[in-house]
Amino acid sequence: MELSGVKLWDGQRADGVFDFPALPWPYWAKMDLTDADLIASVLKGDPASFEPLVQKYSPRLFATARRYARRESEVEDIVQEIWLKAYQKLSSFRGEAPFEHWLMRLAVRTCYDFLRGHQRNRETVFSELSEPEEDWLERFVRQPDSANENAEAARQLIERILEQLTPAARMVITLLEIEDRTVKEISELTGWSVPLVKVRAFRARAEMRKILTRIAKEKYL
Image 1 (tube, rainbow, N blue to C red):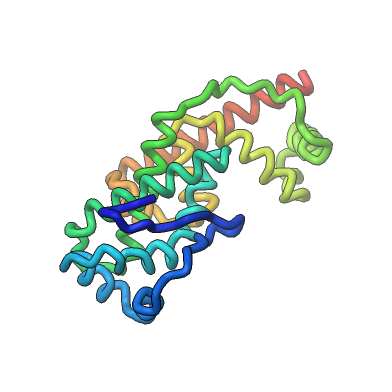
Image 2 (image 1 turned 135 degrees about the vertical axis):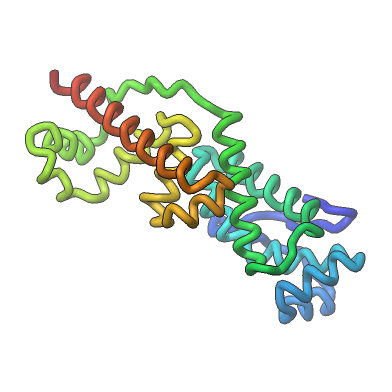
């Protein structure tokens, strides 16, 4: 990825950290600067000061993107898009909140755009559930209140269900239930009003219940 002739990364390791080429000492000296110092330097015409920000925050961006994209190539495209937008919009950063907060708002909205642009066929037939998933689902059908014993199986099944939700539903459930965000935080991240977040959360839970009921009927009725 290159911005104004500055190469931001050569390769990405499995942990989401980028491997930089051998860079001159002044680059590594920038790693000790604050985010505000680096941003000010970029805005004054030093694009190389953007590189430490990429190195610092890319792992979190990769973790966020992986919540919404299945293929690693898609994850990489999302992260690249986030950084391109961040660089292009950097002058709009006012410093009223930490740069990381500003960047995560950009990340969430980019992931939402990805979901809307890559809607897959959500009518998945759950004919190849793993044995733990089937056991969990069977317990859910028999006695829903006791179906929380195998958290891992539940998590895997929930991931399958999330892939079938509408983009807005998947976004709000991921932020609310998986990332444990508050309604206010979700509003700030997405740009949705607080009432809209509440409405979408209600509808998303209804979508999930409907899908889970359909799965149960397919398997056991």
